[in-house]
Image (cartoon, rainbow, N blue to C red; front, side):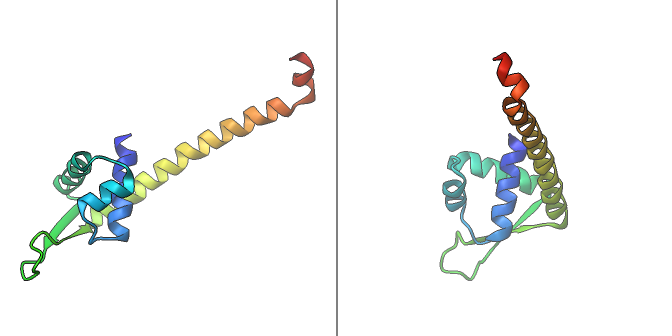
Length: 108
């Protein structure tokens, strides 16, 4: 579950580095505190770096950038997510085939 949320945040921040944590939490359906916790964990792991604009009138304007390690982790998590969904699809496909098998229907 945490990997799933980390992947979603990495994808979101890569697509929109200027996104605020509040906007990210709204987009992901997570609490602001949970979003903050995950982003800070990603920063602590060196997967995301944060820059703020000191000359900006809005002092809370930040940019979240994926580090090279963050990009690698996003790719790893994406592949892991794909493999899980592929296994789920294959299991469902097999179940549907069993339900559509005339011999099995006769035994029901």
